Length: 143
Image 1: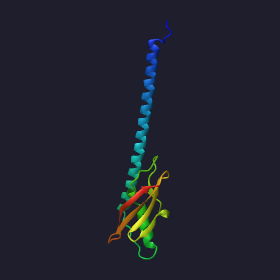
Image 2: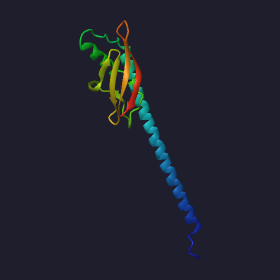
Image 3: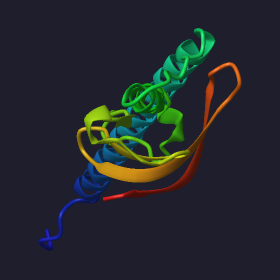
């Protein structure tokens, strides 16, 4: 023998290497699919929550000091669809009421996070004749 490995040994080594790479690629694709599904389920849950809250009787905006702001900020918290960023690692972006503030009549500042990342935004609101509150995102960014 000349010291070269037999052809069958080289073929087996290549077959094992290809199988290992294929296995890693399959595992990577499976992880991406699971993450995509979790993200889609989180978005669906947020939309279902939003639909449930909008299907209820719209909140009446209280007249008087303090009461009006609390109702408006509570309504903002029920609208996570205003947040333009997806959550990370299966988290769902939500407003955190203690951090949200009224800026001026018709304008609110919203702080949101999913437990991994956080952000903030400026939102315009309009109160309809029957007391329903409609929101428009003006600007939002991640911290």
